[in-house]
Image (tube, rainbow, N blue to C red; front, side, top):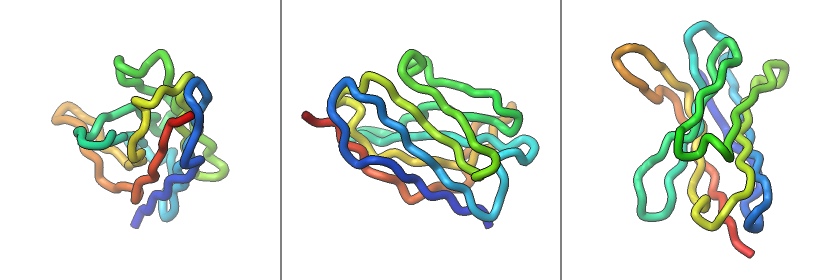
Length: 122
């Protein structure tokens, strides 16, 4: 059974860069047809998909965050990473990583990390 665990700083200042890492156990980030997503939920708001990386290393970004977000992976460590640049207080949220199935029928998050709180504040 695949398990995911997010890690990263809990607090950064505005304009700084945030890096969050998701460590995958019991699986591989290169398994065919798997996608690995980052999702966030700001206080009082709905879940928002940020971006993903697929089994071949191709990346996908939300249009609303495309200019400030990037997803990468380290296959040797079985990890994938989210980097957000020039963060603002609006980036404050609980951030989740998730194993994802993405096909013609839609996008489905099949396994989730527990989530990590990230706060932007001076």
